[in-house]
Length: 175
Image: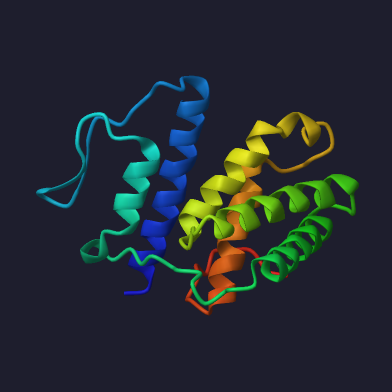
């Protein structure tokens, strides 16, 4: 029973990655329809990707749990801890580089901004971080061995771990 939610989260991440790549290649792409199960439609015609994933994440009868950050209230401190974790992860995975600190600082600022605006869901914060890193990717591209989605996926795993929620066994080590 634990494997099914894990597979769904992996599927969500894969669909999210594909949709982002599609949106990057053709920004006007909109989802036409997506059905989960035999009869439940989550996306009527012309639904945006972000709205689709919000609905998909909130689809509790499909087994996907929304992890909330409402209990993490010190956004500055939490953002700083997250940035430190990102740097430790990237330095351990590759080698210490200044670009890791710069990407982590961008993720921290995105996190603090999203939380200050009232965002409490991990998936939405993950999207904000990835979008912000992508906007400024020319700063990181020459030296980074990862991309914006690698960082935002790590942040998703990190925040899931920070809330004490059960994560995916396929997740990388959280620092």
